[in-house]
Length: 225
Image (cartoon, rainbow, N blue to C red; front, top):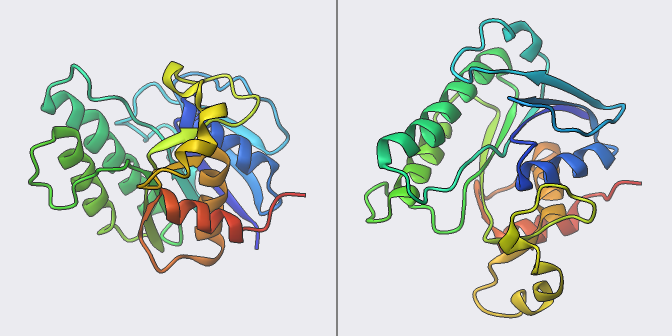
């Protein structure tokens, strides 16, 4: 099966890694990147849609029809942020985009990048974990074909990436060690991209996927030729 995917957050480290994987994979027919600025990648499969207001899709709504997958990789750090501000970007923005997409593409599989430590109860002491938990929970209630929450921990960037956060630059040589230390809370961005493609193709019995689940799913995905 081949499918068309929408990607949010392609100018960030996680989104860029997922984008590179989708562009190289035979299962992905085309990719629409939605962002505030160009991702600076050129590929025959790639189309870009520059959107300055992520709370108003009315000018571009018809361009969002006909997609079978959304890889939502848009996110920010909560460091230094108050809960209302963080919630607006993490919860409100995500839910607004998801509601629009579910209305236009009810057969879509929605993959949300959450994070290790997310609080599904929504009642914990850690602010970002509560907000992420509510986002996961409310996404699952939307009329998509399926919704998957990916909770990676440390992620090894893909070779050739431009957008790499400083703390992750040392993961190239540290990664083999981190994978051996309990809990197994590390994966590669290549694995993340492959796992997202896998759940679109065949689904997964788990709707919340940690680093170990991501690595296992990636191993069962038909690798790009």
